[in-house]
Structures are given as C-alpha cells and as structure tokens.
Length: 365
Image (tube, rainbow, N blue to C red):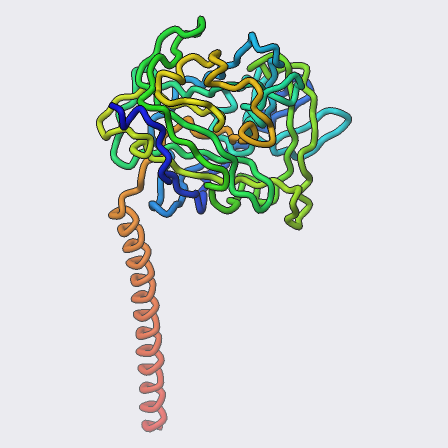
C-alpha cells in the first residue's frame, strides 16, 4: 500500500511517432454564435510508438468533467482551440466537430485532433485562463485493466517543443464530492508526473501537419455556445517557425499508473504538474488549495494544450496481426509476380509458336 501511495516518477510513458487516420466524414455545418463547424471528422484508427502499434478501439469514457475551485475568485472560463479554414470580422469557420450548443465535455469526448482545450490548468482573473483544477474521465460501471491497454494524449505545441508537463492518476471509487456526482472519491495512488518534453515529434493533423489554429474564449464555464472571443494562435503559412503550432503525443499504459491487470477503476484524472500530493487521498478534494494551487502559471504547469482526445482506451495490435498483414501483402505481391510470369511465358509461347508456323510455311513455299 505504501508503494502505491507514492507518486510514480520513473519514466513510464512513450512518445507517439505516427498516426493513421480513418475515412473522413463530412457532416452538416452547424453554427454556434460566431463559430461555424464544418463537422469534417477524421478518426484516429491507429497510433505508432516504441511499444508498437495501438488501435483506438477500447472502451469510451461516459463523461468528462472539469473541476474548478469557484471560491478562489478566478474567472470561470473555457478556452478551446480549433483548426480553422477561414475567419471574417470576428467570425470563423472551423474544421471539426460541433453543434449549436457545444460544451467542453463534448470537445474532450470527440476524439477529434482538430480541436482541444487551451491552458486548462492556468489560474488567474483573465478570460484566457480556464482555472480548471482537474479533468476527470469517468467510465460508468468501471473499466477492468487489460494487458497492454493504454491512454493516448496529444498536446498542441510550439515548433521544436515536445509537450508540456502534467500529472495523471487513476481513480478507484466515485461518489459525491463538493456537490458533484460521479466524482472520484478514491485514487489508486498519487499518480504519474509527466515532465515537459516527454512527447514525440510533430505528427500529421487530420488536415495536414501545417494547420492554422485559433482560440475561442468564453466566460460561462463549460458552456461554449455564446460570448465567444476569437484570437488567432498562428497562421502556419508553410515554412515551420517558432510561432507555429503542431501536435505531439504520448502513450501511457495503465500498468504505468501503478495498476494491475484485472484491477477495476472508474477512470483517470489529468491535473497540473504543480499539484502537491503525497497520497491518492490528497487528490480527492479539488478545492483543497494546499494540494491544488490556485496560482498555477500559464507559462509553466498550466500550459498543457490537450487535444480533444484521450477518452477512448487504446489497445495494442497483436504482432500476429501485423505479421499476418505483412504476409498477406507479400502473398499478394507474389501472386501478382506469378501472374506476370505466366503471362510472360504464355506470350513467349504464343510468339514462338507463331514464328515456328511462319518458318514451316516459308519452307513449304
């Protein structure tokens, strides 16, 4: 128990090195205030890492909740970034998922790498600081850990950087905390601290590596439907530069969080890296300012820009499947070669037969 209560500090996460997208769907355009969503969605089918290829096909979280210390006097804001196609006079057309009443929970459940949350853990009185102390991914009925299963997260980063730091912990019980239902009441341990720079190199976004981003800032908590203030984050005109933004990612296995195969949890939480904790019980009350700082800076532990991802569990692709796909490809190539060889032989035999008949006819003449 003592070992589990301590924070996990050994390197346990691995960088994402590639992403395979599925077929893009093009839904109906929807408008919320001054944002129009094109609803073009390219699902992430697979991710590559040093641990192998993972499929994004596991259990999906039932909900994502955002825990704020509303008594701290800080703003009740939300800042969401979007890949956009155009802007005009305070309005914008963005690429990804959205409806006429978008919420922050929908963003993080979307599995959409064209959008995400900007500086969620940054504290302050400005609308550009979201003042979120914790993000909880909840699985109704629980999730039982399987061998190799993992969480995949992406961060929107400046060119040349490899991810911001944060803490992640799995929770083993839920109930009512600070008036909120289905909130974590027990954690497996004090979690895993992810240091800055732990993620991989830039990966392609759904619309290419070189994408344009803006941020929409609202002041109504998780409700993103009105009072949107839009700010361009970058233009990414073609030549990578220090002001350009790119997606980087990492993979964390549940066993890296100090969990055992077969153990049941109810979800996992993301929080700032400056959370001061010595045991899992410290993490339960997000209003405890001795644990959850209300002065987290947006340039340090408050600046992880999580993409709208991480709610669906990733599962390792068996090597036999990879080998099978390789053998299938090799077998297909061999079949094509054999067909080409048969065609070549048949062509030669026909030509040879024709030449033989021609010589015979010439001799008879």
